[in-house]
Image (tube, rainbow, N blue to C red; front, side):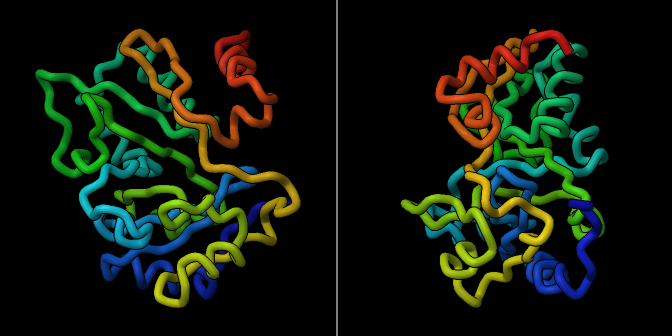
Length: 220
């Protein structure tokens, strides 16, 4: 199935909400679920009906945002390249250590957790034009607290109601496949990876996350 840019008529409600500081529900490629995104991290948490100050992932879809954040990341050059690859190609959520001597930018603090910044880096083609308008976003899985993340536009619309726009890209996704939120990994300064949370990426490799970790560390 060809993947093309979504027209402005489809992404317009989300763009309007994001510009106004409100949350929008955006699609990911299968087998990832939809996500809640906003320029204000509090709007993401409020949409999910959880504490407004809870940490959320920083969506580093913009190369400019990544470049501004990179000096604060406690990674060797090899690990930095590895982290970028995991975010862009594997589409995982990644916990990355920050330097004590180089504080992260203020806008990264909502993603800070125990000395690590929580990052998401997917840049799906259908959202290219929309994301270009909002180079710095915060993001979390599209679910209300206690519910599974929305796997399709119908689930997202039912969960969040008419007050939060949902961008429909199901015609570009395989809605018949099992979906899940992203796998979460932690990367160490030397590029060593630790599996933190099960998700879409490792589940495609079977019931044991070790199979996915072996895939990541195997020959490329």
